[in-house]
Image (cartoon, rainbow, N blue to C red; front, side, top):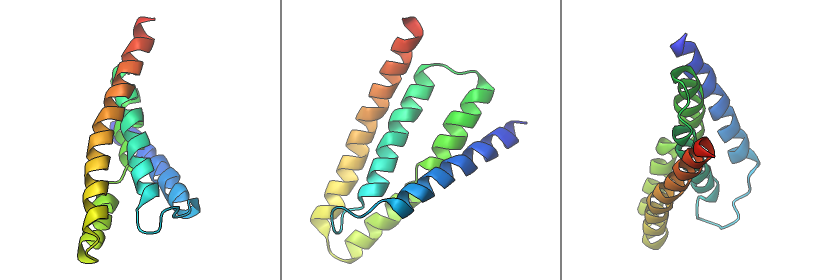
Length: 120
């Protein structure tokens, strides 16, 4: 049952990510904005899901499955490597630092809001 929950959640998360990537325009020419926004919203949502302390089946579906399928570390690293190979070092370092720095901050914000919703 756990495998089914994770697999179904991952499929849903991947479909959502694919649709956003496909429909989202590249607003800034070389900056991978869509992946950046997907990873930040995923970090926030995973923080929130962790903060509300779901039971294991719900956490497997929402946290491991959907958020795991929605966020994308492999695409992030591929885009970083392409920026490096094209010698777009300023974009490379900005993308790297903003993704990790803001990712940690929004995950912490989500965790805080999730915990706050439990106590109120």
